Image (tube, rainbow over all chains, first blue to last red; front, side, top):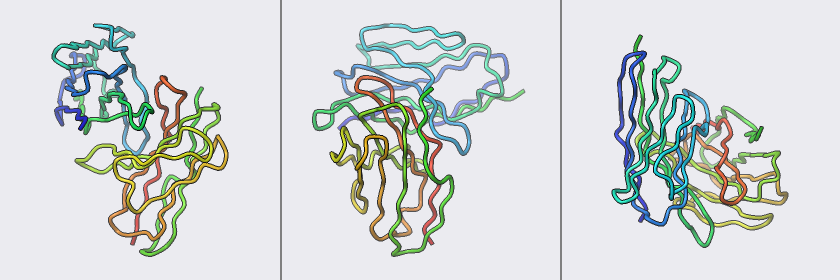
Length: 113
Length: 111
């Protein structure tokens, strides 16, 4: 079935760039998403990319998509302590004719001062 | 702004009780979803609904049912709660081909 893989943990220093990687399996996915979850909260949509795009930039966030390798990455420039959270990658796929999401297990980003 | 509201942030229930988790969205979204989130397992889809009175099973529907009597409200029902249903439950909604928006979650403990 569909599977989304992420590394579990990333630690960076404040001001550095962070890169969170994700691989997915469904080559027919139309959209790929990045969500952020702060402690005790729900998931907040960060950004998403349509599958016919290679890159999307939104302020400090850059998403790169390599469709051939089914690889997605999220780069956070000038990482701040407030960026410490769990980041989830998700791919869309068709379930009984309806679009649903498969999530990775999440990458915990820890930003130290 | 999209608003998805889950009725309780924290809930404690006893084994065998019937438990209702409620979710309301105010953006006229046709699709609504219930997930559970467990450490090391990520988010897993329990049920989803694409229209009023319609429902589809997700990946882990066993032990759960749902109700969608009105477009804005999607209820998750634990018919007879068990300790292995202790988890964080997340509701989401969207219009087709648009991102899902999540509520703040309900942390449910079954004693």
